[in-house]
Length: 385
Image 1: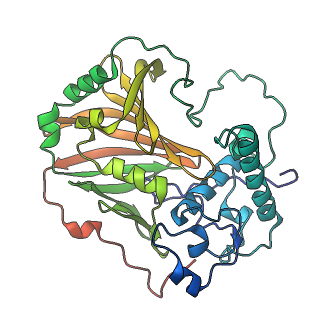
Image 2: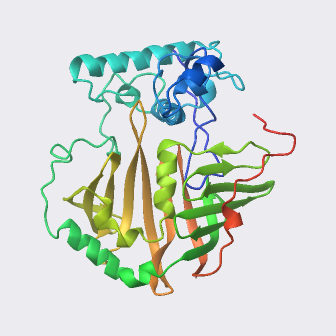
């Protein structure tokens, strides 16, 4: 994409569990007619059935379109309007959109012709956060660090030899460190108050969680509340003066994980395959890495403090048609509440940005009205884009 002007991505405020780089980004040809849609077989709604002007991503489930666009924005370090016309995403007026289509077709062809259709080459392979592909090797900076790229197959991943305790032993130590299975399973609700720091600015936040797997956050902005909701099945985002946005794909799966009050007691059942990958220094302590594979879902990396046994980092991957997007959550400041230790501070980082939540007050096993998990109303005057 030589000659394209780089645009620094903006941090999107108001999304607790999700950073979405822009709205509905769309590729391709004209949508099918209503007659064709009615005749289509039952099954997942496809991209060309829901969005206008789909070309390259025909046949892809509709809820994978936005995650695919997120992968592009993260890989190139841009926002949606780099390729798309604001308010008219289906238009082909911008040359970068035409180039993006060609680049996707190119990566698909490379993987098909050279890697037996396994996804080895992606947008990020060459772009590395730049609009222009990186063709010259970088010098080794003193503070250079490896990022959490797309994980390889288990036999190739990290090439680390297992040492120390087994994964089950680490899971057991963690569960005991936070209070034990009985104490964890007795938690039916959790109300947290504190602040969220986005871009160096602290904003008040409240988080309500309720079994089974319901969670909502209210970020109290000057012009109204920014809301992130998962009701146990579906998720959405609401911001002052803007239409409600549905969660899709990896964002929805991540929200479900965050909403589970009993996940610490279910780690052994969560994974189809686990292995210990050695240790890594996180903060001032060494932590054991556990690599877990789940049936039909992207893998998860868990990091347990070598001394305390507490979970200090989780890295999960969201699947998109173009590649996997990593989300890293660092947990700290564990304190006891109703017999269970929970982190009072966590930092969530994605390619699109990061935020830190510091909790100041926690109440557990208190009544939480189901109405809090209801879909937010549309802004007055209807949706605005």
